[in-house]
Image (cartoon, rainbow, N blue to C red; front, side, top):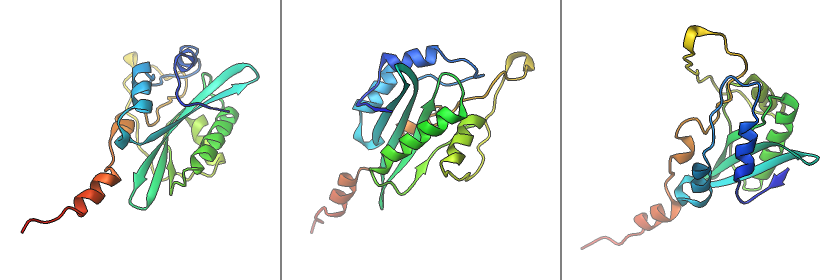
Length: 177
């Protein structure tokens, strides 16, 4: 596992080499750059790269965001170019270990991919519910592999949280007489 401050072309190369999935959302470099360097109210992002020997085998990114009692975290993305439950298990474990250093009350994740779901289960995640994924496939053909859809498939990493300094300052503002 390689902790990095930001990611770039190496992640794009991983996605270009993806095989075995029916569909997966891509991470445009501009979005990754904006998240990692952008507006503080969306939280702090923790990107990790995973290598076996000299070969880059995966990428994960977690989001740490403030709560009333401290912080929570979300596994936004956990991606390996070829679906592999053992590789995902290691990636989830390492990501959870790094995120634990921030002291979150909760580390959440979501996926319809059975191999990533198995990796989450192996790491002690508890299934809290089901969010169905609606898929339209031309010709109604069977999907050829798992869907890898996580927290990056909608606006989840973009939704800002109330900034603590704003809330505190607002509550301490003097009243007019």
